[in-house]
Image 1 (cartoon, rainbow, N blue to C red):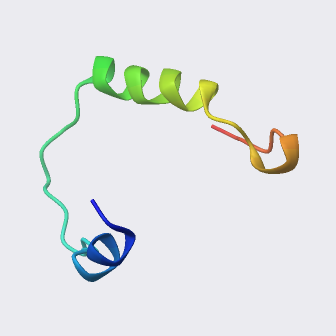
Image 2 (image 1 turned 90 degrees about the vertical axis):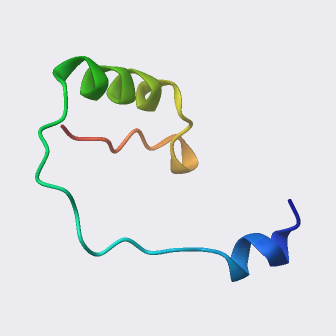
Length: 47
């Protein structure tokens, strides 16, 4: 996908579902976030 196409088709969600999210899904996302690089290696995450 080209960068310009990504910019033009970008969406911003303003209305969220009220469905509860499974704890395992949350743990999975947070586990992946731990491996993501931080800005300037500042490690400024707070949960």
